[in-house]
Image (tube, rainbow over all chains, first blue to last red; front, side):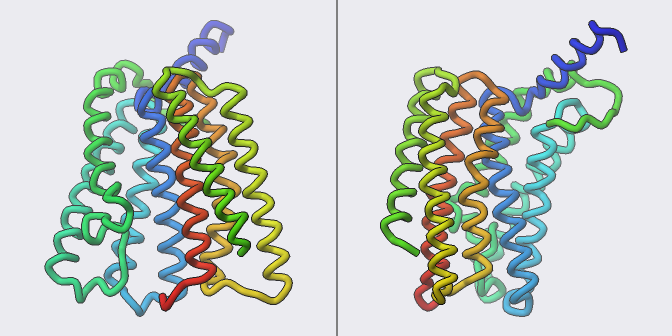
Length: 157
Length: 121
């Protein structure tokens, strides 16, 4: 790779449209939820799984969705953009479904899951976040397509 | 847990967070001022970790030991990671990132107090 191509490569690599500008804050909040949900569900499942199996499994699923959304939003390209849209949509459906289920059948949720009661234990951020995420992804969709390149592994987000 | 240190770290984190959000609103990137503020918060958080280690070594223990350790680790890791991520965007949004990180630290320290002394839960 000659020098010009290298400079170009660096410039493009640095510009993930979904992780730039206000999107950087979005990635930050997603990352916080990813870390919080992961560590919480690891503790819950390893120490008191029988206490609330359904809630803990749903929390673990939520944790995975948050990790995928964080990575996808931080990365560049149309493929990651699609992954981010899928993750945010899954998150929205999940929080609505689990939220409704926890209100209708509270006995199945003896302990708080991330998504129970629409995320009321987390300032309702779980229900707001995917809506903001999907809106942001819609706005950056055109730029994600133009910066798309052949699949490659880059180490930095 | 030393209540005074916890209160101090929450207060510092909230002040630093407010300063970051003010800079976001004023369209300023992260500068020396905000980095210094984050440094002060981190120093108080490190003092809290040291005091927690001393207190636990002295025989006291948290009501939820695993969660306590996890929150303690999170409290000191959050800001360095937040600073790194905020410096990747030299615009107002970098300041916003640091602001969110500071608010997260405040919440982490509140939870730290709750898992140290959980009332009935």
